[in-house]
Length: 111
Image (cartoon, rainbow, N blue to C red; front, side):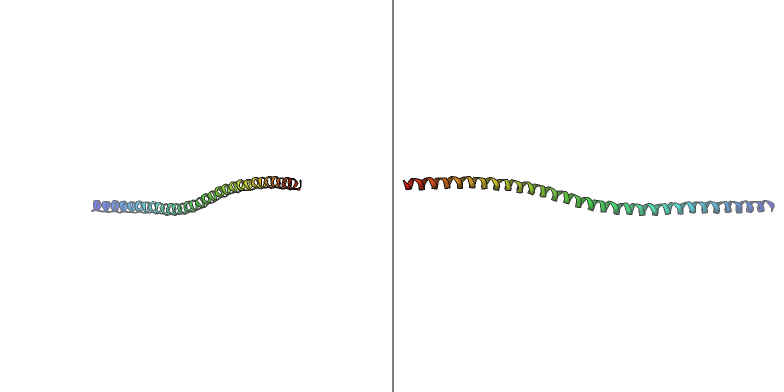
């Protein structure tokens, strides 16, 4: 009978040790689950931030494209203004020449 009591006590002791080991493992598992949840939330937050940065980058690229178009239009405008100024000078020169010719013709007609 003593042997049976010893075996039961050993089994109870092993059972208690197993319960403690299970509790430790469950605690570790809970910690890992908490870490996994935290990591999942961090990944979700990073994905959201990356999407925002992509949007900002898209808008910045659009702004840069618009700036390039504005610069090109400004250059075209400058070239057109230069052409206009050149044409005005030509017109003034032609007008002055014509006025001179008219004066010469008038002078010839008087003679």
